[in-house]
Image (cartoon, rainbow, N blue to C red; front, top):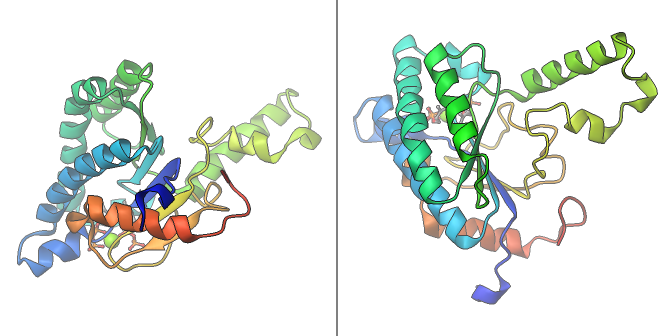
Length: 238
Ligand code: IPE
Ligand code: IPE
Ligand code: MG
């Protein structure tokens, strides 16, 4: 495709799937796949930024992922620990604003502290916004939002008639962030797995068989090419 015809989505969301299968094929433990996946994520953030993406959201750990073997969960949590700490300097060097969505109280206290610190220290950066979903589930997010709205009604701050779509959006973890234009899921699965169900109402979907640890800039551009050929009527149409 001619470069001038390539449309760059403002907000790209990715379900990074296939780490375990990728490792298994190489006769390595699943966690080897998660470690490679974390490296690919750092590179993909840079690639998305260099192509002009403004918001980049990734599904790193779902509310359902706690059901995995204890050791696998621990190794993933350790990857978060390492990442969240090293990301402060990296994001500041690259003008990246980092945010985390999902339910935090179930995470270990040091991880919660690292998230708060990373968000606080990068909040004034004006480049790409990088959103990481950790202990995120769309149903959980919507449930928490409902609870807050119900409390506001109960406290007499809000009339049921005043509940609008915008108001609901403003009670989700993604408040203030435009809806994704493009969702990519790697590794052949074609389902949402409880990711951003409210926000993806008009998003274009792109599925690829490539497992996340093999994803790269060429694959990202391929997804953008497909996106460029779609005729969008609603959502953030430009
Ligand atoms: C995605 O890869 C990473 C997480 C869910 C944390 P998987 O671990 O789901 O890998 P597969 O799907 O089993 O290959
Ligand atoms: C979705 O992938 C969650 C993440 C990528 C973090 P899963 O591999 O956990 O999804 P299911 O369980 O196969 O639907
Ligand atoms: Mg999976």
